[in-house]
Image 1 (cartoon, one colour):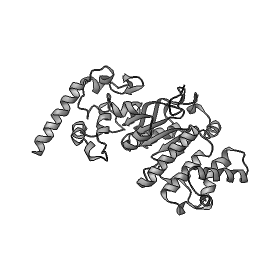
Image 2 (cartoon, rainbow, N blue to C red):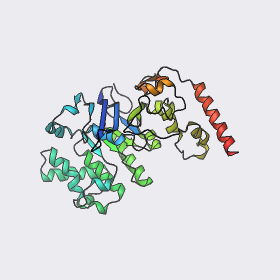
Image 3 (cartoon, helix red, strand yellow):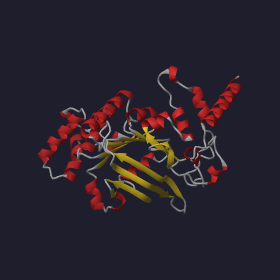
Amino acid sequence: MSDGNGATDTPLLEVKSLVKQFSIPGTKAVVHACSDVTLTIRRGETLGIIGESGSGKTTLGRCVLRLLEPTSGQVLFEGRDLTLLNRKAMRKLRTDVQIVFQEPFDSLNPQMTVGRQVGEPLRIHTDLGKSARKTRVLELLELVGLPPSTYDGLPRQLSPGALQRASIARAMSTDPKLIVLDEPTSALAPEAEAEVIRLLKRIQDETGIAYIFISHDLSLVGEICDSVAIMYLSQVIESGTRDQVFGNPRHPYSRALLASVLLPDPSKRRDDAARAERLEGEIPSPIDLPAGCYLASRCHFVRDRCETEPQQLLSAGEDGHDARCWRVAENDLKNEEIERLRAERRTDAADASA
């Protein structure tokens, strides 16, 4: 069974209770980068991972590919736990899982031709001869919209947009089933960003590849992703389809984050709503995390239970829509309470500006 995007019901990738901690030299303390992260992505699907800087998005993406070793948890790719594979088996599997990094200038060797770099995965992972590799590289350059002359060019001769296209061609060289896109357009001008997004959509339509799209650009995620996971302070605090998360955000942090989006159409901007949803206070330290909800010290709807009870990712009332908040899961947080707080904060803001 599949949906309109070609995604099937069988998971391509399942991340289960993933934890990643970084030790601090000379101390017993650790930085909690990913805490109890659980996600699912299906074939042909684009999963968006969004959150503030430092929320754990990039660390999660690198743990999925084992560029970083998870501290605990499982990463199941087509049912195989990648965390249990030895180096040889993991290297072989990299033909199926690839990554495009945020900064194209840093991800390409300035002293190697573009053609050689795009063809490097073919040299490592296939038995193709030199002539066959060149033919395949030229096909890949055409796929991403680069002229054949790019083959002998050096990275410094390409624009940022063309460099990122070359990075995508390199990631596509082994016909992967999944690509992690780590902020792939953040270093690009708006026109180049639009071109790369159109390219990624076309490649997905033609090949059925799945993407994990890591970004802080909420508008972009809302445009291209089928499902969305929002991260806050190392945890996924809400996940579901794009329409569920963007159309009916349930977690207080999700509502604050989505209300902060500045829409291009002035008539649709909701400055009063953004002010009403705004969170206050400092984000807790990732070294010394709270015992209960990580948002408790900043949340307008906090209860005593929130401060002492670790929160689980539970159903938010819709199939496949989950939130890490007991009040949402138990239907204790009513719309009337939310609207009452919004009205109070609008009144306070109006009095302050009077």
